[in-house]
Length: 82
Image 1 (tube, helix red, strand yellow):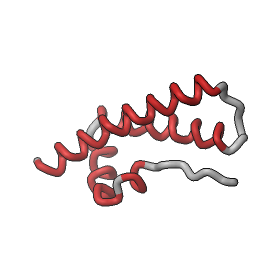
Image 2 (cartoon, rainbow, N blue to C red):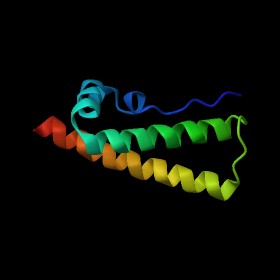
Image 3 (cartoon, one colour):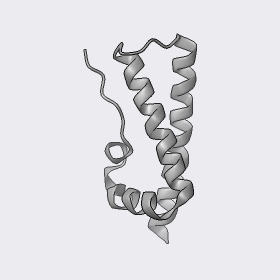
């Protein structure tokens, strides 16, 4: 069974344009976005069996992804208000 990954534009489709603008114009957002994307891809590879990752490491990576997602969401909300 193929497990889907969670790109930010799918997680927050209502912010698709804002994600694009912030990636281009906000270095902090862009850095967090890249970290989120890398973590998401690593989780996807592990869950789909392409790479082996110990359970504890996978859970830790998932927590990192959630934290990054929360930070990115706050930046998106702030940009939407501005």
